[in-house]
Amino acid sequence: MAKKKNKNQEQTSVSKKNGQSSQKMMDKKFFTISDILFLCIIIYHVCTREWPVGGQLQKIMDVCLGFAFVSLIIKWYALLKK
Image (tube, rainbow, N blue to C red; front, side, top):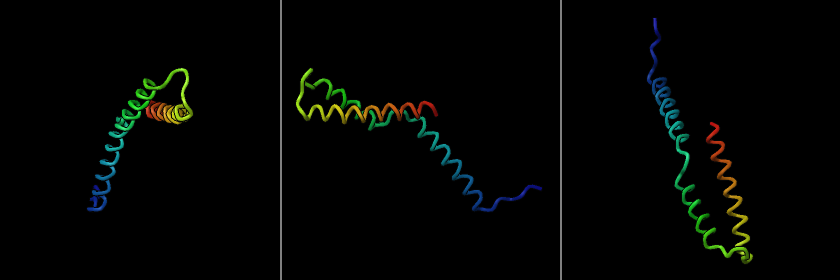
């Protein structure tokens, strides 16, 4: 004889299923809007930079954007490995 689930157990199992499906949906999102916006900022910075010289602010921006770009690559690599 099968046991009947009470109302709380049914809601819990439904919410777990919905949570798992939403997590899978989030995992499928590889590029987010912030990633695309950040890549546009990097492209703009590289195109408008005074090559090969640049002021102190440009060097600081290079370091900050480089660090953020490496972090983004690490994020994409981690998502790809999942």
